[in-house]
Length: 141
Image (cartoon, rainbow, N blue to C red; front, side):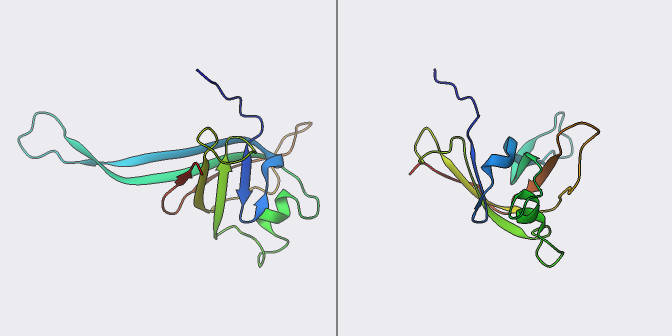
């Protein structure tokens, strides 16, 4: 059975390849559970409701011109992506899309950003979890 060591993932933020800053990715889908138990039942009954998708990243922070901080947080409140919805793509490997390297496309709502995060003597990193608006599309071609 093939295994994949995630060491060369591809992450596109709007039209910017931010793969070099990414140290951790989690693309998650869950579903709301609706309680359908009626009076007189001895056990709860449930059914699936609406999907809830999100993406979580850990980045190595970079303040250089046109690097991560500027791409996501802009140079002012007028140019930040925080509070907007951004088209994104993720592939497990930075290579052509295929059945063994699917492309996941979605629109992330940029709800948070930490411009400075870290501790004495440690690498400056950023951890974010952004909800996804709508579906995640998986493509193998």
